[in-house]
Length: 270
Image (cartoon, rainbow, N blue to C red; front, side):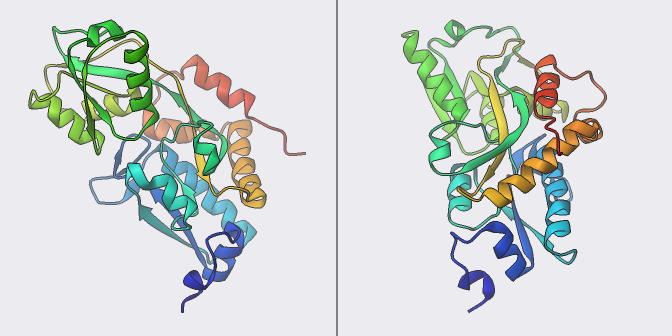
């Protein structure tokens, strides 16, 4: 039996890394610009870059010989993968919620985003009422899907909600006229549009929800959570986060809420 199999999933992350020499980063295939597989088949994205900063801190804590192993996780199994010890940290746009904290812990916030709607030009969707009677694609098992269903219910609006497995499939359904709108995190939709090849679509200017992202971590592992939070706080406090953001989002001015998040979480280290 190998070391990884011999250690229980409940073992502390740093303890497991010390024994196995491997730090397992969970990432998603199609959550661009946060966590995705690039044209070379390699993990990429803003939140993956943050996890590489965590990997540097892990090596400083454990050993400079620690190997990073990327583990592709499906959106609907990502928290279970963390709970079961298949990964050590989840590096994707995971929204912090109280029910999710029953299964996993979360780091300091990594980003602020929210849901918007992609629709065909000339058929604008600027409020929930505009979705009445429409076929709406949304990523299955996400807080975005929950917000959509709850909001339509509260407003007593009828619509056909079409769950999808990944964002690209959702946009493909819109392209094929199998849904009338696609409801998802604004930055993810914008990234797909920026790739080109999707003429005739428009992204709503409005946010339909607000989401706080953070790294999902194993529950009740204070030592590892402290290492992750210390890494993020240093990035925010020193301003190094700006270069990491620019790598993904370019030189566009930061949203005021994101600026506030960075300032609030620039925790002192002494």
